[in-house]
Image (cartoon, rainbow, N blue to C red; front, side, top):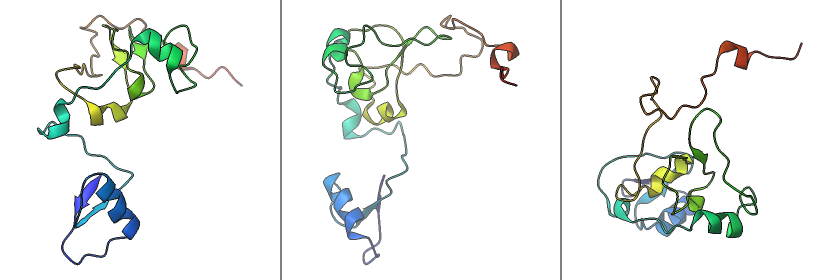
Length: 141
C-alpha cells in the first residue's frame, strides 16, 4: 500500500524506492503489510489477466503445488476448485473457484464475477457438505 506524505516528511529511502518501483515517484512511502481493496474505478481495474488453460497450468505451472497434478483440488463442502495462486487461474474453467485474497488486486469485472462467501442458506446450491459438531470434535484424548 502506498501513501502520499507531506513535503519534507521523513521517509525511509527503501520505502521511497519501493513506492517508485510501483509507479509512485515523489512524496510517497509504502506500508508493505496492508492492502486496501476498493470498487473505485482506476486504470488497472479493467486489465484482463493473461491466463493459461487448466491443462497447461497443471503441466507448466511454476508452483510445485500444481505442477504435475492430474487435477485441481476440490473443496469437500462446496462445489468449487481450489486455485492456490492468482497466476494459476484456468482460462477454460467455467465453474466456481476459490482464489487467494491477492486475486482482488488483479480483479477485472469484465473477466470474473465475485460470488461471495455468505450463502449460508445455500441458495446457490453449491454446498456439498454441511459440517456438524460431530465433524469438529477432537478425536484425540
